[in-house]
Length: 312
Image (cartoon, rainbow, N blue to C red; front, side, top):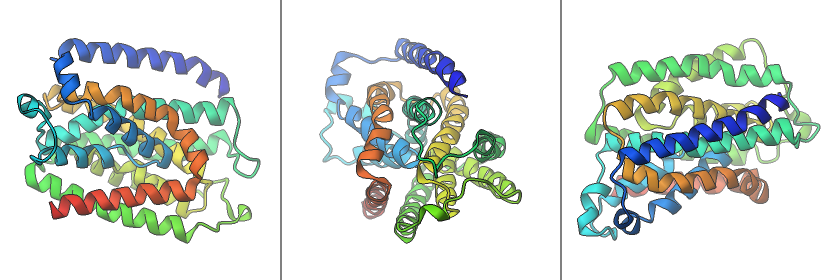
């Protein structure tokens, strides 16, 4: 596995560079746009750090910020307001696009850390075949559920953003509760293998998570991370698996938004470099803060942003 990660990492990074160049050539990005909408760059950093350090999708940062930009108090030059103003469907589409880059780098970083550097503690090491089951089962049902939801479910406008607010609020509270309930988990209680019946649970999580991700650009990673932590799998493993599954799903979900013309390329291109930086830094920030405080801060951000959107 270590050899495969070493070979695939430069290939994947080359694909991302080529994709960024292609999107840039299709965009109307100029120095004036970058200067006026520069704040999407640090938003990309923050979103990718939260996404890749906790397993929650970057959409919990991107979509609230895109919604907040609609507020006239946000300092957006009047000439660029049309560029910065996004419909709910466009916010989700841009979130998908940014996550394709930011979560890709985070996924590669986690894979390199686990398989190449072999940094997991002895009581956190999980066999490769178990990791394959943990990630493969939700991907197997999550991607089809995502694509079918995009094709046949039509939730748009105010309905979409209201559903996202409620989902984010419930997710933040759930993550916060689980974080503190299991903060004293002993090493002897950690799970390193999977029960046969849990495959069916993971398949079910893939169906629900894939459908939710199609609507909000987040969902499957959050559900998976919470479930694995609840089932006492090592936190680092839970986060890594959630990131790997999420990146596959956002790549699958990107194309429908792209071909539908929903991706506002100028905003995505400003945020993507920040997301790449955040995806690279996320693992080290997770180690520095520790899983407890990192997940606590992420939960509080999700709750606060959801409350802000509901009140606003």
